[in-house]
Image 1 (cartoon, rainbow, N blue to C red):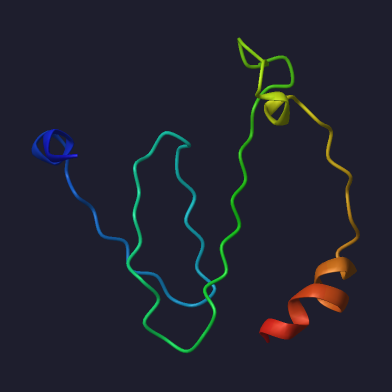
Image 2 (cartoon, helix red, strand yellow):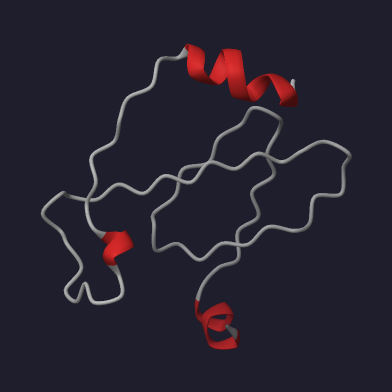
Length: 85
């Protein structure tokens, strides 16, 4: 990490509630501990081509392509996110 910090710029990103940050999947990133009484919700999504299977799948079957099932918008609103409002 010391070598990386010597070569690359360290950028701070202060965000407000409701903000979203989208970054490249290879981006090195870090976050300080949450110092508030409010939950910090994180959603991580990785996009990849369906034909970009891992070279060696032995022991890595979880990395295989699996199609996503679309859920209705109400799934978040009605059942799951209510506890965080």
